[in-house]
Length: 398
Length: 144
Image (cartoon, rainbow over all chains, first blue to last red; front, side, top):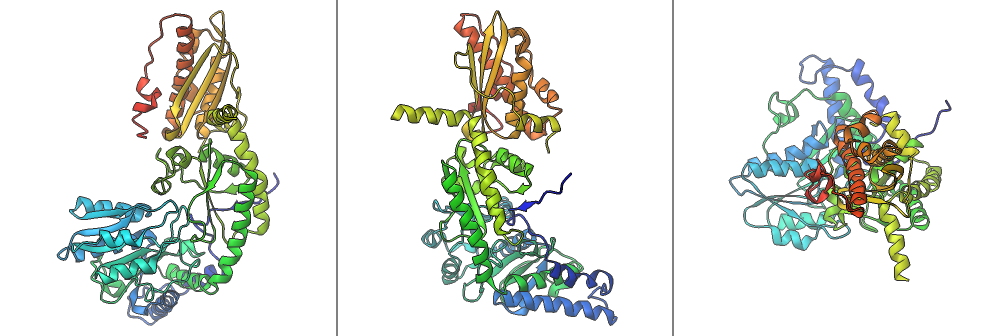
């Protein structure tokens, strides 16, 4: 069988690990394997590697070296930030504010805390997926201890007004956490200028390895530990350090933030040509998310009268990897909570497709999608009872 | 995730379309739940001589509709009524557990179309076993 080229358009799910990053990691599996907590001198090498990586992460975020803590990934960072701040500050209050479009790592952490007696406000978003600073201001009470709003949305790519939201939280003396898992490498981040107290990130979203992330905790933030055990990470995060992962994270974030404007422009150029082409060739299609304030690689598009999974299977058949917010693929029958929060009707939410571009793509990939996708959509519409009705309705209207 | 048979019926669906002068029409599902099936039957001398479908839904929904129309063609109404969701799923060499409702929907579409025919001919309607699932307004799996 002829080898077919895979077109990977699911960078928001995960990315390949850059060969450069892998090379940086390799010596820490075989040669420099010493446990950094040990006394002997070979352990010093790993200890130094961790601190180098910590500096790399701190530099990328505009943070101090000792404000970076390594974790097992974005999910752990979110859990730690939210539960840790809630538990450490419960004497001050029991109110948390988040948004309706957060990642489940945030939403489910908040729901867990609700069962423990905390109160959570889920801020709405507008049709583009934007949280309103006015809404946040209104939602803050004297019982509020934490605001957690994602930097950029994983499904629709909308970039939230983080600096503004952070300023409001700070004005009210409330901690501000942001899940920046999708944002690293796509938008410049400066935790000091943007009034961020806690920030979650995960290496495998920016060409680093899986299973390693970090939480930025601004100096002075009161937070409980999530994991208890050994004294690693200044007694804040127990567990023997994932040295190769930490080294990979450091190198990956350095590479990802070296030229954000240039990188974003390259990806956005492919993305924009793809969007324009899809809208030209396929009727009854609409772009979800913010028209401008969105991640450079993100396309989220709804095709009326058809269902998302059936689009994915056809795309997969020709080697195109994409994703959908629609229910069927995620194992539940519910459509995307993000699309529903933007006010998209349920039936249209079912027909959504997410294409996320990045470094695995070449401009030619756009042409392949533009060739394949209209055929797939039209084939599925031909067998859709909804499409036919609309055609009839239109004829009646004339 | 899907069997070869499901993929075959998804990619090369049999009996797509709508019979213009159908003798029985069954539409089940709800767009807000992500699936709608419309089954049309041509019935002569108590036999299903033609069956077609139009479906809005996932891969399993399309494959289930295709298989269900294949299974009822050439059968008497009594035999066609007995084509269960299990039979559809088995003929497809299995469906993932979360997709079983697609085969239930296909069975429901066939039943609705047969009862539509019976109603038109002033025959008593047959009782549907899984009415709560056929009727997506009360579907436990989909609350929209």
